[in-house]
Length: 74
Image (tube, rainbow, N blue to C red; front, side, top):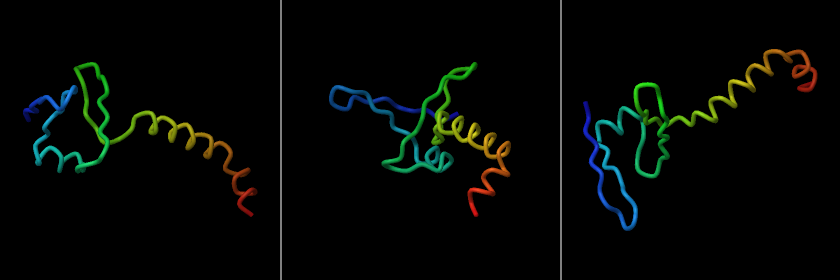
């Protein structure tokens, strides 16, 4: 388990994430992390869940309309 410390930053609150956790998240200073709610609590991830949903929808359309896309590419 990794502990994250919360600190006051102006009128906001900031989280200090240990270097090892950032390495496992493949994140660095300036990157955006997403906090999502899950059945067992919260999840911190570098991947945008909304973008992932949009890509899944796009892939489904591309798979269904493969012939049309092939014709358009000519």
